[in-house]
Image (tube, rainbow, N blue to C red; front, side, top):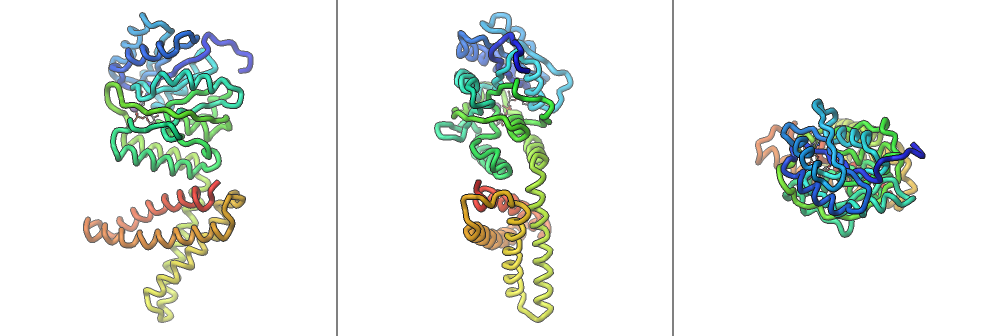
Length: 361
Ligand code: GDD
Ligand code: MN
């Protein structure tokens, strides 16, 4: 939309789901922080409480234009709400910010200034780059889940996310005039990741301190987590599924080799060791050829790639087998389930390691 004229220079899009206790304070701090700018606040609300009414009430006395789109039949959750905000915004530049004040409105001005520079289209506010802080992540578990899923995500898109330390942040600025909204298939929480991976918009980051919630409760849930992994695998079906297929072939080959060698009278332990080492080497050759073929110009030479892959896979099987028997003996878990769980976890860790370390971009 080159040359389009807009009513505002900046729209702050705030997706909300039952945040009535946060609206007044958020508008107050945002208005104060944006004094002198031609900015507006747009809430996109899917609430079942009175959040939308509170917004309309607060808008009456706010020092900047405040409006709300209330969706009676929300589609695509948080991501869908943000895209609807992009469509309705009366400005090219939008800042997306949570409605619970975990994202400090005082940072908006910096995001806006940076995204207005000619070399970037998206500016993400990062909890994880130097100078940022994620201490608002409620507890150790949330922290680990956030860190872990960030690592896996970056492993899946090593080139695109090379310089993006916090692809799951919900606080970012974007020049929507550069974005064709039809390319997005928003699902759930991770709208920024979706936008970065599906476009080639140029991304920069600035650090920020993730604060505690002002009022109300988080809407993050196990279901959100499941949706997130679905989104990830859909976005990155290619590489990861090829890696999985090769891993599965290896498992079958492993069993076949053990069977063959013991048939010829070899001791089971020796047969298992030989089968494991043969499949580890074959696995490396296959992923080198079929999965990470585009990453061979990586910083590491072929022998170092092989050595790190070989050592990792040996350590991984050496750890997985005792963990599995522990799950069976101390937790009473049926052994097929313990096998499946440890294999699935090992698969994700193995993929992450190969993507980030062996084939370091
Ligand atoms: N419109 C709409 N629809 N808004 C929603 C929905 C929805 O279905 N679900 C949640 N929201 C709003 C919340 O009201 C809040 O303003 C914002 O989205 C973030 O939701 P929280 O419940 O506060 O989630 P969080 O703090 O756990 O997640 C935040 O941090 C994550 C990283 O740890 C968000 O910023 C995420 O985007 C981010 O990935
Ligand atoms: Mn929050």
